[in-house]
Amino acid sequence: MTVNFKTLKSFVTAVDAKSLSAAAHQLSVAQPALSQHIASLEEHFKRKLLVRSNAGVTPTPAGAQLYRQAQIMLGHLDQLERDLANRIDASAISGPVSVGLATYSTASILSMPLLKAVRSRYPEVNLFINDNFGLVLSEMVMTGRMDMAIIYAGSPMKGVTLQPLLTEELFLIAPAGLQLPHTDDQTIALRALAGIDLLLPSRMHFLRRAVDEAFARVGVVPNIRAEIESSETLRQAIEAGVGATILPAALADFSSPANPPIIRRIVEPGLQATVSLCVPNHLPMSDQARAVLDILRAQIDDLFATGRLPGISAPPEQVPSA
Image 1: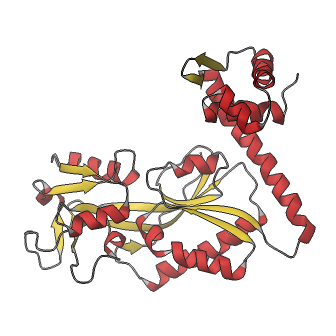
Image 2 (image 1 turned 45 degrees about the vertical axis):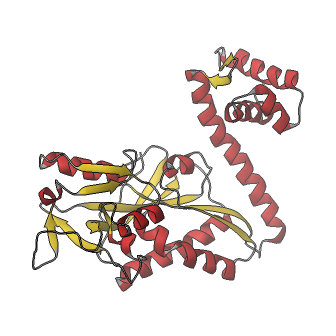
Image 3 (image 1 turned 135 degrees about the horizontal axis):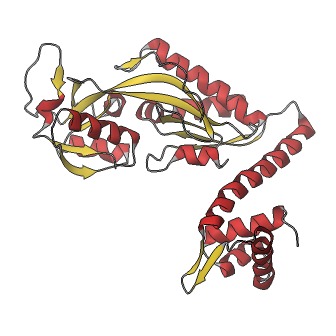
């Protein structure tokens, strides 16, 4: 048996399911047939691709490499099938589109307007919005599991093209009533945060790494009380007085009007984060994805032009793809 989309689909499903029996059930095939597909791939590539154990199956290093490439190829096939199906009625834009909004400004400000605009202009488009800060959305874009994403990124990433959209300053966002050094310009030096209980995203988050590096440069060990990915949980924790955070001002935009947080721009040094549009550099974009992208670009331009949030400035130069 030669390598084809069917055998690649069997392999990818087995890796995702971590079980040959579960994968066979998902694909509605007999398990021996599925095992034969895997065996044919191992024979073709002359490499062991899966390690079988009582706990299930896991990919070998060669299998992990094949898994990544197979996802891309299967994504191409799925996209082609959707595009050809849409050509039946070329005047109608329809089909699924997935958008990641994993920045504090875009997640809080753009999610609902984007949903409303797409529903109004393209009612046949099935829009999926992912604002999960805990996921590596650039990897999902690279493998074709997501059409586009707006992420924090300031340096090239393999497999995607990054277009800088804007720069966000980072602020101290603290519970109302927290005693802080007085300044006329409502700023606070990074060193002054040494004794403050902080609530920050996990270390896998781009902003957390930027904050950690800034503290290291000024020789301060921050007092991190908790790691929180959910922006809503973070807002609630600040309102409850659990601690403060260092993030873009957008996090405080929807806080309770009756109990607004303290917002101070951080200086010495100032902290900034680049917000970039992330699209695949090797996968074709569907008509419906391009239509949604046009809406998203217009909304980003409006957000920047109207100055709706403090700390937003012009983007840096274009970041090339890796």
